[in-house]
Length: 244
Image 1: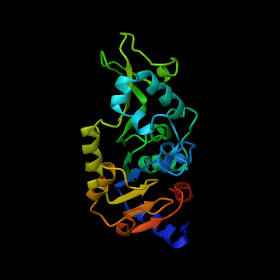
Image 2: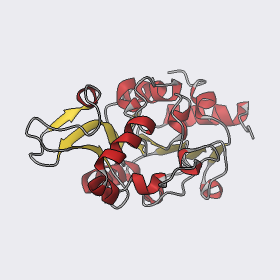
Image 3: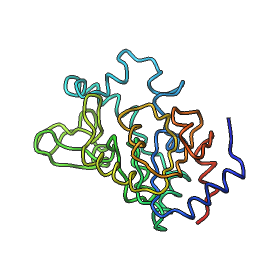
């Protein structure tokens, strides 16, 4: 369903022009237009058939007990090194540079918001761009991991773990606090590319107290009735119309 029409679009633009503390809250749909598949759609990763379910492979326990198998899956299915930011990533970065957008809160781990130029990005589920040694706590970047095969190790010999929140691990409290702070202080909240069914992340939007809540998602969400403006379409079709 595509509900993009001129009246809605003009209102969206008007609100952006009027606002000074916009926050964008995004999910997998932000990056699908960069060629990164989502997890929960009919054709998504979680609906593909594996001997071990992806949710199990991407858990802290599985990483600890089957590190080699974890990294085999991780390298094959989680690293999209050729992906580039799309129009939504770039427009959000432009809004931040223009002093209108204060933060991006993302459930994605691909690092494309930073690559597009955004700086205040709260990565709720971590990022594939950083890795930490479980032995000495030294850190390194994705470029170092790509030079290795199998399980990557630190110079000290310790196993390197991606700075991604795995199943069974809590979200980073500092990231949560920063995201909630920026959402609660925003005068416009744009939610895009997420079904708003994954908690605790989806619950963060409850902290928004304004009257410019915009939802942009191809399918309906449980929060559509609470939104002030809803677009049932891809993000790119909306953000490509924004001119600063």
